[in-house]
Amino acid sequence: MEENTLCRLHVLIDGRVQGVGFRNFALSKADLLGLTGWVRNVGYNQVEVLAEGELNQLTTFLEYLRNGPRSSFVMNVTQSWDTATGEFTFFDIQYSV
Image 1 (spheres, rainbow, N blue to C red):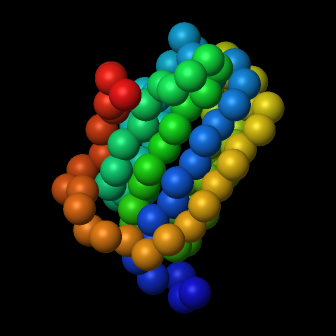
Image 2 (image 1 turned 180 degrees about the horizontal axis):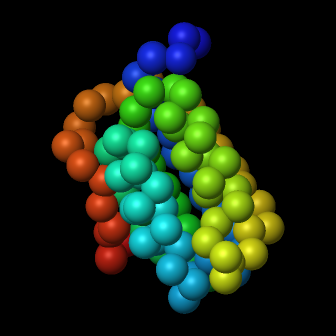
């Protein structure tokens, strides 16, 4: 894929990622990179992210997610890639599953 190809990234992050500001961290990094989509808590000690944007920005975003905010501890990151659908206009936090 080319750098400016529009893509969709789906990520599940496991570890100490709840109660440490992970969703706000993801929101701020997504906004910084101009991505659209959402982040939410799921299950126990897991955060889910669905983001769309250019491949190079999503790759940078994924690295941010792998590191997380200072108070988090990321144990595992599962990712899948797809073609962007363009269904989102901004990036936000979802509070219910």
